[in-house]
Length: 352
View 1 (cartoon, rainbow, N blue to C red):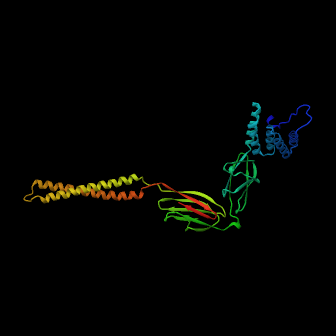
View 2 (tube, one colour):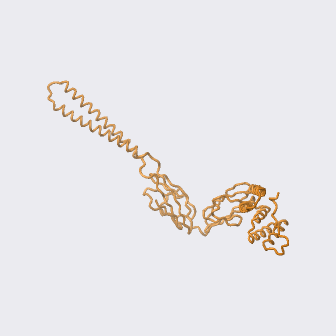
View 3 (cartoon, helix red, strand yellow):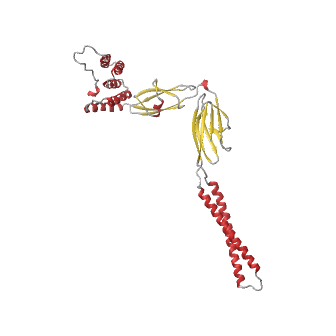
């Protein structure tokens, strides 16, 4: 139980004067004993500022614990364990058990706000924006999350958490009545066939829009559509990056193979077509007295050449049609293009 008791000051025997730090330390112990924890906390903190004594951290953490402020107590006790160099193993083990007990009472809040750059206060104390990316350690009980931003209506969101619980609070601000107005949505550098939709309706650029969050969609043949939300607000700038992906298609090798096969079939048809004509010329050049075996062989050879030529041309036609289909399904060049969406005060520009 020693770890749960305040550390006390041992004065040197015969000392005639005491420093202000020692006086405030003793007052803190007296106030803590009288259960005036707010006063004890102030005295211990003043004594720490004057002396820098590491042991005072333990007393401050113990006072926070008595006040039910377990999150603050846990943080101070952690610092005490880091900075105290002369603790015995038994003492360090006792304080570690105390820290484990404190952590069991802590709750956690995850705060998400819109607009993202709004300022957040927890129970009246400002929260560092960097801390909003992680869970906030809080004491069990009722808390108030206050979110404000120039041009928007301030919101105070109450939340109740139990020890060991993790909650998420989402606060979306609305534009203040006096800040309502219009902004301009401008689409620049897009393909001629690109279609811009705002809140589901086809819109031409430039478009006048109310100051609030809008659903924006961009579509263009050959690209997957891009969807996102854009907040148009008065006298603010923002940069948003979106990405329009090309739909996946066949590799160019399929089209190249189809074109090569079509060319090969045309070549076969052309060669055997030429042979057919040459054989025909030879047959016509022969004098005709009787139907000799040589005449019949020459005629049969010409018929074979003609058949092969016809097969080649028919195959070329079929392969050519298939190659055209492959061409429409083939992806050439880059698989994606980047769309930079830059918002200026009351105006949005999308650049491909």
